[in-house]
Length: 228
Image (tube, rainbow, N blue to C red; front, top):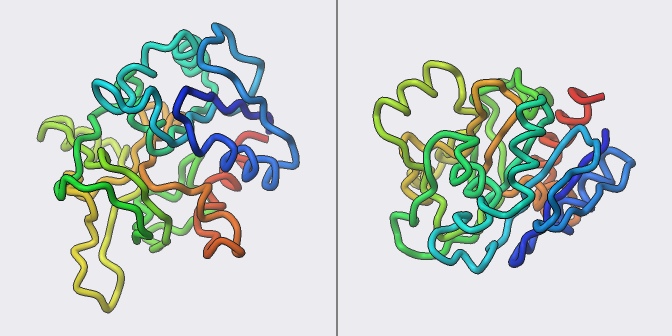
């Protein structure tokens, strides 16, 4: 599986996801600067986490107008898989490649901690290595991570199976399970084609046992399996 990782000014997880991709696939990904206007021929495009353009205006708003996003949109229309992680998810919503928006956390504070997620779909390109209903742990690191959409949009994406991951309470705790106020606890969604996913938690930070967990590694294993 060949992958490209898009790098914006302020990206800070581009190297993390590149390392994970190389470890899982055995192929070093191509790093693409945001001012490029074309993408190499790849199977997967990743928009990594970070603070593109310093989150000026809105998180992901300026990055969504970078030259490379036109190429990302074109490749997505051709069926190339796209994964947006944290800031990458924000960029995908700002570019209208995914429904909804990411708003300021309900606490108004930056949150950086592990969260529990429930796998709502185990039959997608991004989740085939998981079990339906499985609870997994991944870290979040964001201040604008509350997923928002109007009731009609939420009903539609729920009905069409576009919710892939949802925040949930860890068994035996009093935590509500929703760390940021996301509507209906939504943590990750796919588009109608099933080939674009946005995820607020960081799977690349949960892909090495030496760093505390490997639950996120299966996102990349799923992609490798599905895109071979």
